[in-house]
Image (cartoon, rainbow, N blue to C red):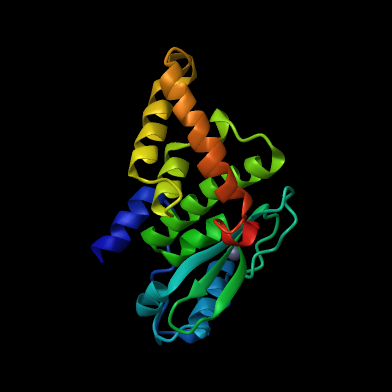
Length: 199
Ligand SMILES: [Zn+2]
């Protein structure tokens, strides 16, 4: 229960907390439609258990707001796919707002990690991978996914903290960053497998 309250405070939006017992309520609005659909593809009978079976699996930036969420919500540009680690079921496309309907801090983190990675991937493919492509989250995700080892991750974090102007005043660090980006990060991003559906 305290978990639900914490989520409400951080996102300041209603959560489908009453779901789980009355299947008659599914389909009464788009949030319930989404959760009802996910529940029908889950192993657990009640949403309070079933929600832990799901994780964010894919991400796509369509460039334009043209997609429709499985719940019926339209005008999506950034779309996610989710998967159930128990049943193997997948569900999508789902909008970022609707990912929050799953009421899972972990899924929101996965969604943000995936967006950061997808942005890096897109820039690598467009040939515009540069300082503006990187965020602290992006650097951390590259470390989490095994692209950056501990030493390279520390260098990238340090360079990011310094900022562009001060990094220029440290040629040795600048060079290290350039090598890490060119020899490690860019090739990994160009394989296109990091952000799932963005490939
Ligand atoms: Zn939706």
